[in-house]
Image (cartoon, helix red, strand yellow):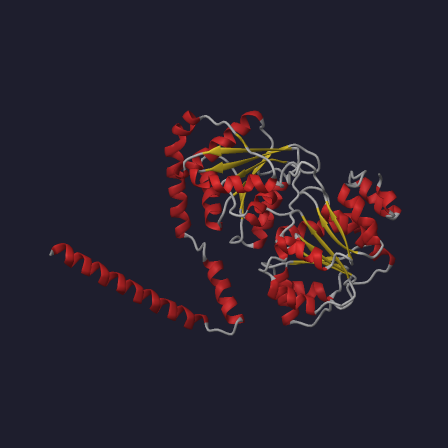
Length: 452
């Protein structure tokens, strides 16, 4: 099937061909005609299946028929994904003079306010920052939008964004087309399906084998002791590099601090990389991603802010430095490779404490991970070097103002809630002193008893 067979205008078909897109994917084949017909839509498909174009193409066609701003609002959970979606809209819509605007945290609110006041056709936003704009200024209105897209719907509707989404929904018109897309079906999406089953077009990719991840993905594990995990990580990279010198590697870990320390450690032992996590300034996050996408840096170390939606074709290996606690997050992480029919590999480092989590992940994805062989003797030779490099990285990080942004954000949140941050800090400090006094008394009593 061609894009022309989906009732898309010739200018869109031409743009798709110029980008090397000849044939629509299954989710595009099924969802685009129904969206053009005016139906609400819920689409679920594996990562790398072309979900963004499934909603971008029909929206741009409708916009070209009746152009005005603000025509469509796209909500997404992460900043990097917001910029990527906006870029895809721009690539297809440049021939109709598309104006788009990205509204995310970490950027100047005044500049964003000015952009919104110019009424762009497409607004791509994270819920928190858009809610801030709606609560703090009245220079723009969302009352005339035709489309509301909720991308990575499972993440946005799981509860963490409820307050912000309420603010946004209060500002939207009652009559609009709702488009929800996700790679994983959760209880929340199931509830939406049951509530709206007669009113909404539902499409979910079916895999008779029950495997959630794509068949081109080679999924492996490495069993290692928890205290030498970093040495095993280095050896996995070296083993992969022995047969693949140019493929890009994404490494996922659990916290911002671990991500930064790991990045510093790897840089120190000769593996040049970029780090991407929430404690980095937004312009530096975009710079790190640009370096990685352009192949100037072959290794990206990230937290789950990079786990969803990012499309980087050069990624050939995903490493889970620490297996995620929620199996569906594993699906999103490993979905950064083996996209659009290409091959890819995912290697997860497992300690004896992670065996239950591994089994839960295997049950979720419907397939078993096989072992990835690394040379244990090589690990012994690099063990001391990696330990020293990591300790030095920890010491350097302690000397920086790494947690400054976190403290500022915490104070800002308290102020917005109408609380005095200094007063709260004083109460917490008193509690801490009281706790330490109690501990000291218990220690004294134990010491006296031992004397007796």
